[in-house]
Length: 100
Image (cartoon, rainbow, N blue to C red; front, side, top):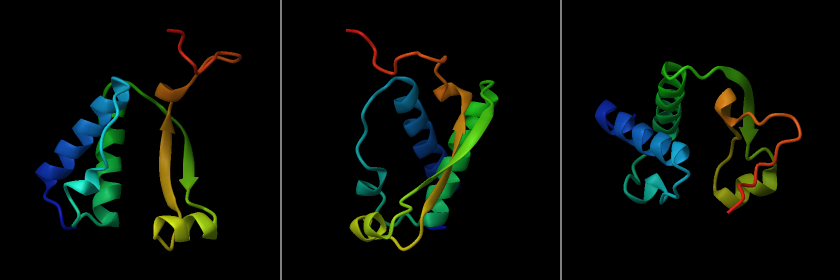
């Protein structure tokens, strides 16, 4: 890993806060170009830990960049994997679009 544990935790806190507050953020690699896959998954693990500490439950897993065309477009050669918690759950027939 290229990033210190403190930086990984700081990035996880930032991204988790952005998600909870529905705020945009710039790409974290803009400030941490040395970040590698191990760092990225460490940030993801820290985010998962934060959510679980708040009472979230893991309800599934996800895969991204699964097509060769998308991998080429993004400059990677393997898919990425993540988790889903009940934080993202919507009741059946609920709308993900919030009214203004």
